[in-house]
Image 1 (tube, rainbow, N blue to C red):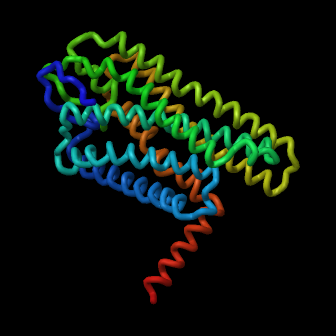
Image 2: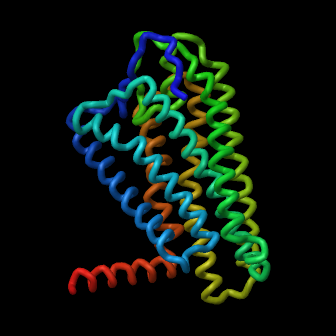
Image 3: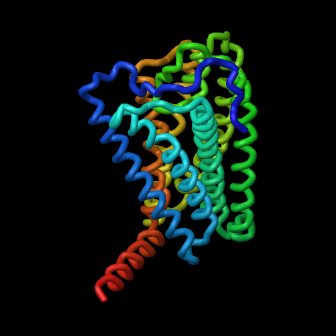
Length: 317
């Protein structure tokens, strides 16, 4: 449902990096363009491979497929507009389009945290209870869990941002960010939004700290299990995998939680550093997660190699 506009603002203008000199606009637009294309093609390759290859229809890849779809949607709904702003000078979004983007930014960003939680639980069962794995985890169960998460997170985010849909705006419509987000937009209202900002801050922290707690617990148990086992080649491989997963999870959660706390302490965090950190924790995981979680695995590499060889032979003859 479109937001009810109780104001004279008909559109919002994305500012991007507030203090960025104009001579760097081309560099920023090219950077975002490359990020979007890498994320688009890497995630698309993962989704297509998982859909077409029956031997990849396994619980872990079902989870990764949901993550790739979420990241594809997020980048497609945000990056083209900020690229247009820096490349063509068109950073305007209609009132309705801005709030639609706002919803999906928080929806898909929060959804990723819960998908990571399911992924960590799956790895915990696979490593710590390998003999019972297939009796506990199945494709159907994982698909149902992911579907429930898509619905649950959508309802939760809609409830959180609903007060923002009713806010009146007048005069100021310049969003000091690379996309419409709750804090960047609601701060433009001429009414006091401190109470709604505090409520959103608490809910945002809880909605990320809860899955992070499960993730931390799962990987701590996994690492204990690995360290107590014999140090074979599988031990080193499992430990390396956990380390790379930890680096990725840290990249996703730490800057995000830091910005949430910073936004609560400062009314209008519109400096270039905060915008950069938001872009870092938002877009960097989208093109690195398929590489870390999927394209590094032997089954995916073997399948991709077969597809490429078949494609070469097909075009040759």
